[in-house]
Length: 625
Image 1 (cartoon, helix red, strand yellow):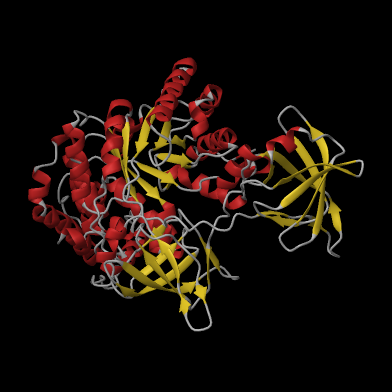
Image 2 (cartoon, rainbow, N blue to C red):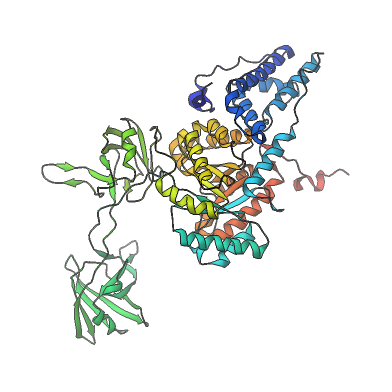
């Protein structure tokens, strides 16, 4: 078996030969189970070279992973049903101890046939104990309340707000994640200092994970739009203005965003009750009334929508008299996007170009242009490769490819068309990219991370060479002892997962993050549930802890109240060893809410196994008399 064909994916399953329907006779069942044992042992023989270089501490885990992949190369559903009919294990819960499960069933069948056991069965509990040991090594010892760890992505405010970080740790945060795609060394150092201080004051250990960005393909900069300030008004269903709009009036040098800049001298003379009058871009007479003046802030109100640009003349009025005249000052350029509809084409170019919308004149149409951050990938793209933008909101296909640019035909957008702007993610699930998982920026960030972090997150892992490169860089910095989390966020990374796990087991502390955002785009959201299951199974077979990540309790985190679907998702996350929350204004509440769910769920579930604690609904009239 080649490394590339190891993963139990749809493409692999299509070439496998399913077992015939299993008859109920014991002899046939025994023969088939014995055949599964032989297959598992044979595959280990084929992987003898790979196994020989794995440290002794991880030999059993690597062997169990190979046994599991051997088992999943066949369709054994009919066999499972037949075994269950005899009251035997249906082999549905043996990820952590494959050979123990197979041998135990084979021995039970042998006993029913009046034969001696085929061999002594390995211990069932060794797999669970090994996974628990590896989880502790990576994430630290568990706290008493919940076995599943909680990881939280820190925002920039965690660098200044010590109380916020302490609240997160008290609420249940076990690992603080720092995304090196944002902020800088100074901010990261302040975050880490606050985490350490919070851990000391609460008596709860909290490890630091620094996540390297990797070769993240994103849209580039757009050409600046016109310098126009648009102020709207609120209207009812009949078009009547229902309330005045408040406008912040600023001195020229401080103008930004939705603010009206006026000359400093004129601004300094404004008082409550004054008005500002002008003709806006369409030539309409407009008026704002000053309603409040504080030391450094002036507020005005208007019931008239308007568009203004720099240079428009504006007058200060008081009691019907003109007190001063000036011009509207500098206004930031508006953010430009390109509008896309199914069937349209646009060009994806390198970062030397600025993005611009489609350009039309009487004779020609110039397609819209969107730059991207990593034009090196153009050399690897083929015609008909799929391409997705902005978390899959816009889908297209490559209809022409050169080393300089790609021509994209849009296939799907939101119902009223899609808007694509700068700094949006790009996914190419059909493209076998050879870009290294470690960029030059990652190597610079690794210098800081190895000096301050406990765990390194490796993004966009695709091949075992990506892992080997990271291990080499860690050794070069004297940081081979650090934990590593592999982020599975591409189709190729998922399909190569057994190989990646074998490579990762060369080190003592390793985990896998199911990065459901990019992975969902690449695999298709309709497949995300089964893909997530397969990652959980394979990692449990390798005794590698899993981080359940992306949009966990997202609505609670951002808006303060969860959806029903999010609560169910959070409850299901208890089957992983760690759950990650993103940053958000309600992240402390989200941590506490998640911690409560995890405590409740651990009484009902351990991985895939239901835990049959006493149910309250069995009390009352259902109790024995």
